[in-house]
Length: 134
Image 1: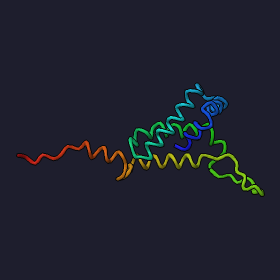
Image 2: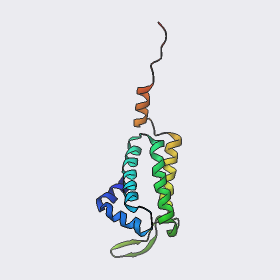
Image 3: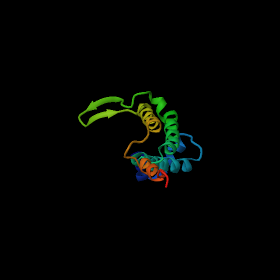
Image 4: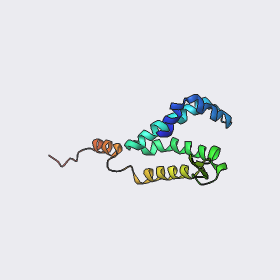
């Protein structure tokens, strides 16, 4: 959610310009699609709702980000370039964090979203009461 909110707060046109510079087709459409996937997909993960369904577009966004942005920067997400009096200076992140997010989504899909998830509450309400006869 934080990534989608950051794109929205900076102005969707800023992200549209980035996608255009990367040579992505229909950058305005993809910018909004990415923002919405990150916001609503993140919300779904946060509350534990529709995890298998929400994970598909989120995984697609992550894979596209890996191959269009992060692969040229290598694996590591932390690239310490120097330390100055103003603090540490970092380079562009690699694809390590995106792989971590993909692994987390896979774990949620395969292992379930947990006992406090909204999905669990919805499943409990839909289960029919056992009929033990007259």
